[in-house]
Amino acid sequence: MREFVVEADGGSRGNPGPAGYGAVVLDPATGESLVEAAEYLGVVTNNVAEYRGLLAGLRAARELDPDARVHVRMDSKLVVEQMSGRWKIKHPDMKPLAAEAARIFPPGRVTYEWIPRADNKHADRLANEAMDAGARGERWSPAGSTAELDAGGAAGRRAGAARTAGAAAGERVAQAARTGGEADTETDSETGAETDTDAETGTGAAADVRAARTVASPGWGPPDMGAPATFVLLRHGETPLTPQKRFSGSGGSDPSLSSVGREQAERVAESLARRGTVQAVVASPLARTRETAGIVAARLGLEVTVEEGLRETDFGAWEGLTFGEVRERYPADLDAWLSSPEARPTGGGESFAATGERVAATRDRLVRAYAGRTVLLVSHVTPIKTFLRLALGAPPESLFRMELSAASLSAVAYYADGGASVRLFNETSHLR
Image (cartoon, rainbow, N blue to C red):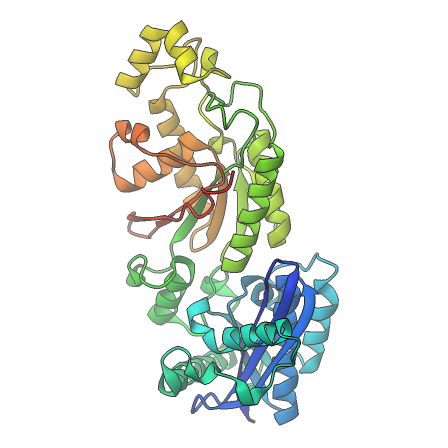
C-alpha cells in the first residue's frame, strides 16, 4: 500500500478577508513533492481556508492512489484536533467541510499531526502565493511557485518526511500489537499518554520530546522532561476602570468589558487560534474575565471552566480608587502595603501574601488536572504576576516591578521535576 504525506495550510488576510490555501503531497520516503495545489478563495475566514487546504491535499492524494494511506501534517490545531475526533465541531461553516474531508478516504487510512508553523512553510508559501495571485486578479499557477525555496531545501524536507514515515509505521506496528489486529488498523496516537499533546505518532522518550516541543515551541524548556503543563496567562481586556488605573479587585463593582476590551479579546482569540495550541480555557469568576474567556473560547471551539482561585486580590476600601486617591485618604495603610506583603488594604482587603498562597494552591491543583496540556488561564494583574513571580523564584516586592497590560499574554510551563519555565509574549499590549 502506498503512503503519502499531505501538508496543508490556509490563510485569511482579515479573517474574514481575502483568503487562499496551499497543499502539497509528498513522498514520505524521499520527501519529493508529488503534487502541489493552491487556490484563491475570495473572502472567507482563516479556518475555512485551512479546511479547504486539507480538502485539496486529500483529493490530490486520492487522485494519485485511492488506496493509499495518508498522514496529514498541519499547523492548525483546530483542524487537527477536530479531524482527529478530540474536539467537537460547533461552527456551521466547519461541519460540512470536516464531513467532506472524512469521506475522501475510508476511516483509518488518514492520520493527523500538528506541526509548528515553521515546519509547514511549503504549504504556507503556496497559500500566500495563491492570495498574492488573487490580489492581482490572476489564478495561481504551479509553474510560478517558489515553494521549493523554503525551509532548508529538499534535503530538509526529505528528512522530515522520512521521520514522519518511520514514526507512522512504528505506531501501526504498536497498534497491531495492542489490538491483536493487522498493522493497517487505525492509528491510535490520540490515546493513552499522548492524548493531550500534539506529538506525532510514536512512543517513549521521542514522543515526550515532540510533545514538549509542541506545547512550548522549539527551544523553550528542556525537551527531556516530557510534556509540561503549560499555562498561557491572559489578563482580561479593558474595562471602563482600566484606562483610569483604578483599583479593581474581587471586592469592587465587578465591571464588564468595555467595547475596547471586547475588541482586545477578539484579537487575542484570533492570535491564539492561529497558534493553535490551547486545549482548555479556565477563567476567574469575575465578569471581565469570564467575558474575555467566553470570546476566546468561542473562537477556539472550547468551553470555559471557572476557577475561584484565579480571582483578583480584594482591595477592600481601595476598590474603585486611583493610587493617588488612596495615597490621599489612607497614607499610612498604603505605606504599610507597599512595604510588606503581609499588609492588607484598608477595610479588610487581601494581602499579597494571602494572594500568593491562594495562587500557589490553585497552580498546584491545575498542574495536576492539566498535566501535559496547554491551558489558557484568564485572570487578573495580581494573580498573573504571582504565577510569574513564583515560577521565577522572585521576591514578593517584584510584583511592583512588573507591568501587565490589558489583554496581554504570558506563559509558564511546569515540568515533572517541579521546575518551571517562563515565556513572555505580551503580544496584545499595544491594543487599547
